[in-house]
Picture: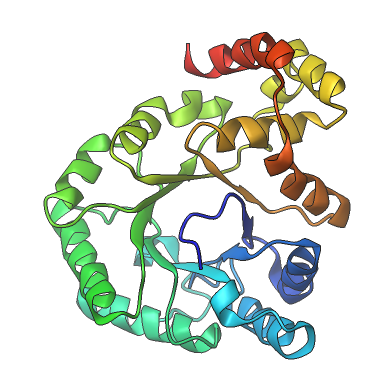
Length: 275
């Protein structure tokens, strides 16, 4: 499977509807899914259930699917829900336990990508966690490794002393000024930059006259314009929509072409983000 999908279906906060929505997303055309071994916000087991149904009933094979999940450090877990490791264990043991749980829940022998859900509380602990991900990659259990919720380039530089970071997944939206420093670092260093909260967190850009004007000219939605703009600028968006229509529209964004006469409109929008 291509390690750089253009769009990923996000499964946070889907609860008991997770399996149905993942099935729906894949039947609309998605082939990449993001989850986490974090019962607080994800039902990783239901993602796995959906993938089994898709393979058994719809002939969507494992090798044609990009599966990405995460190790969530203890502060990100909910102690009232099952935790996929013993929090008293050392970090490598926690990650190995969580990874084993993820593989079982997702009914797979390998992951296309495995991320730290966030840096740990100290840099040495983050480095220890990173080395554990490196070991999983060396064993072939994980094909790509990365980190989420990292807004300090210094952390990425520290990790890269051990091994190149392959994926960063961050909020990319107007509320954090589009995470310019980390985004630029990823672009300069060939790191896949995935975004979440991009639509929900950017109402001003979605309703800006530059965006709506270009959407009207293309006969698409403002959300599609933003997703296409992201894809043209080293950003792989996550879509967590529950609407089949929006799933179709989000996937169709990749096929949008900005004709020459639209480039001025396109530049005006990019200037809103990067200037």
